[in-house]
Length: 137
Length: 372
Image 1 (cartoon, helix red, strand yellow):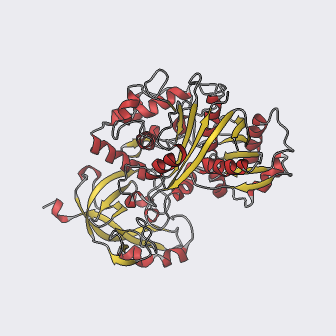
Image 2: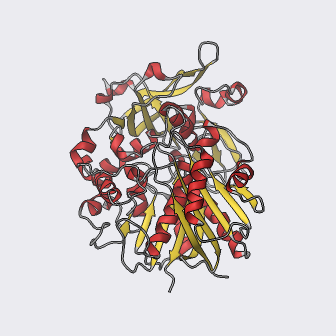
Image 3: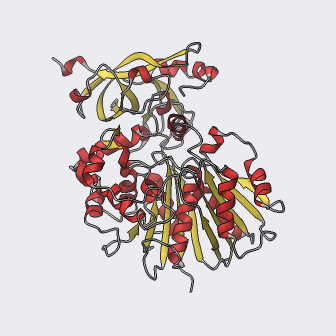
């Protein structure tokens, strides 16, 4: 979304982006991110919004070198697939040296800047993940 | 009703700075319609993707018809991200089943803007309201899947390099390919990292291209037995297994059932990992074994498997996004009619093109048969 002016879009999605809200299907029992009106697994309409766990495990990750405008101050960016137990999310991994990352390590959610829209645009926030303290203890 | 391809035309994928979208489309159509009249074309189906964002033009298919001298045709534009070309062919196939003579044109220009603008457009192949919140670019999902693949199956980075090495080898003899030179496995590993563990040589070059196919009842160049598709998960995060391309498997079953034996494939390899995962989803290789099988030469001339990507694939032929699926279909039809000018399978009886968008949010499969 970076590099474009879609402010209403960003405003409309702020709550679930800030709070890591997902959906849970009452029929098949599975949870997912983002919240959707129909279950992405069984297509049931009987879904509820739930807070997803803020602790998880890093399934896999990559270090991305070609970073889009608006997020370049963070370049290179680490992008991970995080398993929250009930659901998985694709998210940026922060506060980590790439060399210290390992698949399977514990990570936790943290509120961060996602990107900036130029000098006069908004700064868009959301959840990223960082290595959990237990990794260093 | 029997439907087939009756003509195909291609432009070399390259940086065609001096040519417009319409110029390139015109060249591919002229190449396809050398011997056929234009007045009898009922439908023009256009596929273009990146040009929509870099040089916006609404109702592109109508303007394209005027440029191509096809004012008498009905027109339609199809968009399915990176799979657009085969999605356009799916529309054309059904129109032809209804008795129509259909011209499919896939065309795109990626060299009309600096590469960072092109990649900003390509990020939109991923879902905007989850993965797309983050700076994932076009490559990050491929990178994290590649690492997952290596760790789960114990496959080394060197073995993964077999894919680009083979694609470049094939492209050397394809006059329509953008990158017609060989690369060594060590150059793949040493190239600029794009999304670790993947490097620049695991991904496609940014080039312009156009391909045209004439599809009609009884088309004599190659028969089309099916063009099928399926919807996949909206993110790798909601896939049951991120290393399975569910949509490819489903589209393949819909197109081929369980029994089809295919001699030649063109598959979507925007990044090394997707080429390998498609081979595994098509059961041409066991899970975790595709890279090894490629390294052993199973999918090239003289190998034990079918010939895969004789064009050089997206990797080396190039990936002019809206045109790519039409290139794949044209190349397979040329293989079956014995007119492909590069590496080929003599007397190939069946061929297939397999395309996906992004991580496999959708998949398209086209199955072709030899005439006569």
